[in-house]
Image (cartoon, rainbow, N blue to C red):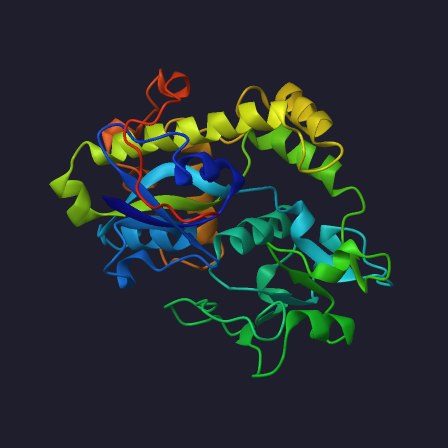
Length: 337
């Protein structure tokens, strides 16, 4: 039994529920509300891991986790910058010298978002950065990382939250991967900085050819050494799960009234797969991320992208992965997700 800790991403549900399997292995997926610390949980063989923290570990020579180039959390970041509804700010470049709150300093998603600001000429060292929870009561997250914070970054005080600091005008903007609940209401105090973030994201895709990776799946090295075939088999299983989800959603387009149109538009823009697995399809994205970690001072020296996914077996996903939709072994007593 291989036990993984993952949040219940839609495209992982077929694997978690046993609709697809991992050849030669029985896999149990434990659904999590927050990203697990895989190394800190003896009962886990692997699970969802921050791309930033994983890359930093590999750059430091720490190979206790074997990363699979399967980014279960992935997304454009232009949508992740919020301001007050009455804010005069309308562009990323206008955030130069601003007071900006964010949910975690070394976080993968926030690193990608800060890269957008850098691309618009914003000097990150001239911004007053404050790190804290989006809403009060959030816990179970390392927001500051293991390295000393730069002088222009500070942690929020106990009892403060990004939502309320922004609403009170003590912040000009916030960076958050997840949206405040009130953003989905007519009376929201907040809005996206970019009025048409979708157009900005299309332009980003045209310029880079990738959607930024945020979290990936990792396995503990001891389980890989005991089962050398596991990384490749699990990568293929995750690919089957993703393909199964797409097939079912194209048939049962029930998530939103317009999901079928979204799926069609995405296929026409991105091709058959907007979130490819494998080291080779993600090589340019991995290189760009390593460069940003160094450029933003998250890591003190340049990072060789080759240390991130050195395993040759993970370069690409087996060509027949999308065709093997039947589970190789039925997982026992899987939790609902």
